Image 1: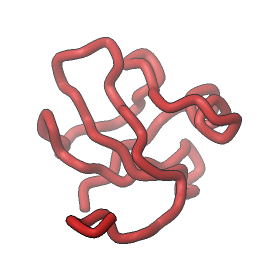
Image 2: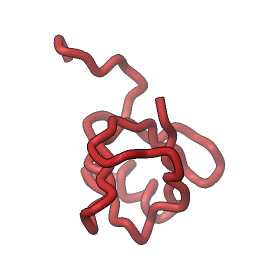
Image 3: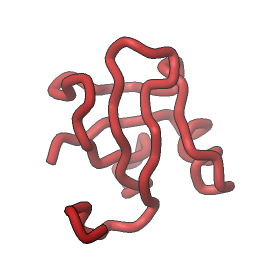
Image 4: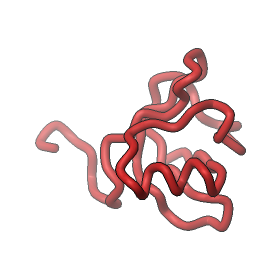
Length: 75
């Protein structure tokens, strides 16, 4: 799964229950394509969650979960 790195500020918001990350808090998303499910990590490499990535919206990441679980049809 492609990883997207976000700032400490973005990670803090997610860990407090916010469900999206703005483009200004994305540090690295080189291999991510629009609409892809991505694994999100913070600046120190710690897992933050899984989200849909948008390369067009100001809201770059919309979170599905903050746990490392399989996202499939049954989910």
